[in-house]
Length: 210
Image (cartoon, rainbow, N blue to C red; front, side, top):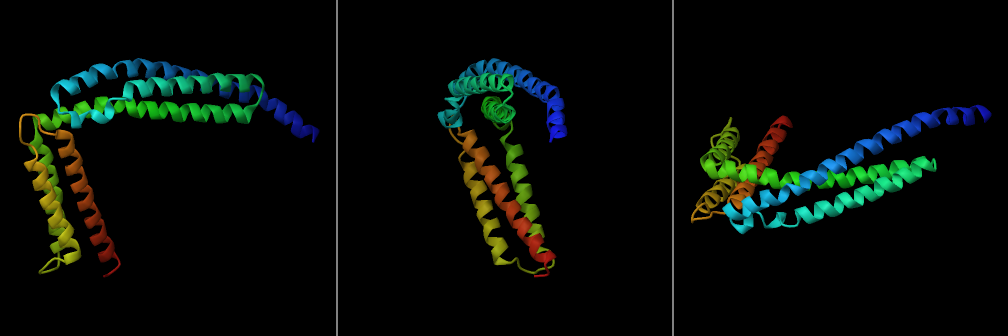
């Protein structure tokens, strides 16, 4: 038992150093995210100026939420420091994990606005590229569905026909002065996901010898 206590005591400096390193790393990240959160408002302003409300409405609260979440993370880091000083290692570790999770959430939210603007810019400039990418995925799946058959299996043909119709509706929606490009993007992504599920099902069935 004495040996175990001595071994544990010997690990204390290592444990403290590890927690100190994580504290510094997460504090630096919190500061960087505070700076990045401050850059979201200009991005939102550009989104509001150039795109219809449906393209950016869900991002409205990001600056405020990001600031709140960073504040929560900073409080957790303060508590983690106190736990580390009191050598309450499990508490310190748990608090650091919570702080990291809060900062991850903030990172995703702050990145979302810039990503949204980049994707909307791309599709506004070249909607045809998104349309062709989706049509290619559908055609590829249709070819696979017809491989070795004279007529496609209705279980595969039906969702692929629905995918074609859904894509056409999305394309028709690109009308007017301010089209809802975000709806268009979410629809084309949903179409490609549906098509990918059909492809996976066909391959699985053929692999199983159905």
